[in-house]
Image 1: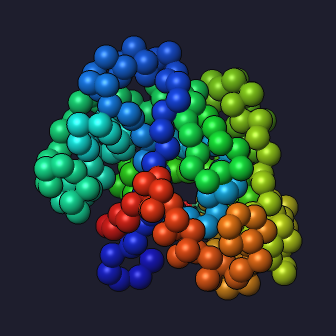
Image 2: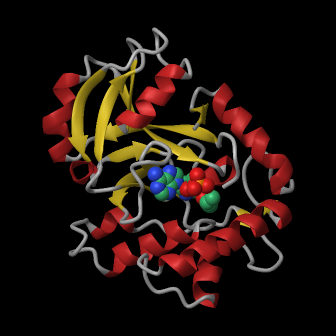
Length: 253
Ligand code: A2H
């Protein structure tokens, strides 16, 4: 990461059905607003390949009123940043409707904007940082080694992670073709680097670096409106389309 602000895309993932534990805490508190889990991503062009979403089970989240009609679920830290970036009405307003711990969100079903799988589940990830982005990560296992390894871990140890195996059943979807690692860059890198678990953080950091460079500089879109374009050209265009559709917004930190 360089100096200066990081330009994320905030992705609005509308809640379709709360997990029972979240429903008890949240449903009566949102005043009829639509609620969105908001994920911060640096790779909007990969969102066609979302298979699930991740939260940290030990992280505290809030549901924040953005205006009369919409509420965002994210960390308090992110809600403050968004308010001061003018995303709330009125500007600067941080209005927490309810607080909830990440573990209660597991199993919530949400919409995944632009994804070939239009609805996905919220699942746990060990390495979500409360201090980065929104604390919510949209999972694209085709192109993110962290997302892919976490998905594999969840499938191997569904009972340990307290998930229903059906929530982790969607396979990685080819979204970007790369000359060196094929159409599923992240799974290929996990195999090549013999990565076994999300606890292999050092190798995962290296795989993430390789996947990012390979995808950005050498990747070609396989799906969507910009199919056939280099990722370098498609990235901004996909982002614009999401923002036009009110499914995303610019978020910096
Ligand atoms: B990226 P940077 Cl396909 N904790 O989005 C851990 N990881 C987080 C996070 C948090 N609180 N908030 C965001 N992230 C992830 C897509 C993606 C991402 C792909 C490939 C690489 C990649 C799908 N997940 O990131 O430290 C989000 O995952 C690697 C650069 O601010 C976000 O973009 O550079 C990225 O990390 C931001 O990480």
